[in-house]
Image 1 (cartoon, rainbow, N blue to C red):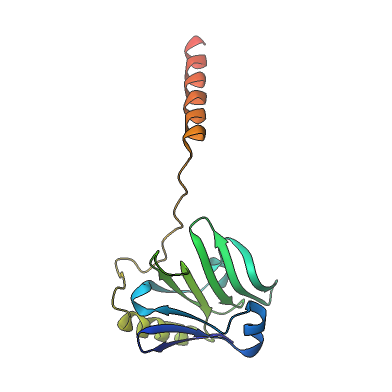
Image 2 (tube, one colour):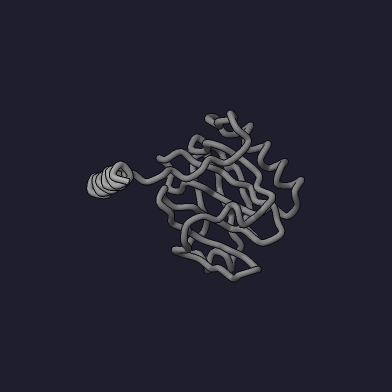
Length: 159
């Protein structure tokens, strides 16, 4: 099972041997300065976003690997029924979120508390994860939507 460790100035997600095989990497390593927010998610499925790119997903058993979404990539190692320590990272990091399951709720809270103290630039303004950024609309699509809105308003005036 994956574990989160602090080694010097880096945050390391250490993987079990079978997890290394599934995700095709030995570990995930990011600088502690890249940690933006640390939260504990009691519902494991709330830490999943986007679609699976690399790794393994066995419904009802585990979700492990890299997931891609409009805001970037996430690395997840979660299991149903376990709390998840979610580490939001600044945009300069290789991932936007690291989500790793803890064995029990108290272990997850203690780890999150320890990581908040270790990371130098943690935003503690809110205890919840922030939503994904919404992608910008293209000019053509927004132009089409405004024309549709004008036509609809004009039709209502005629009635």
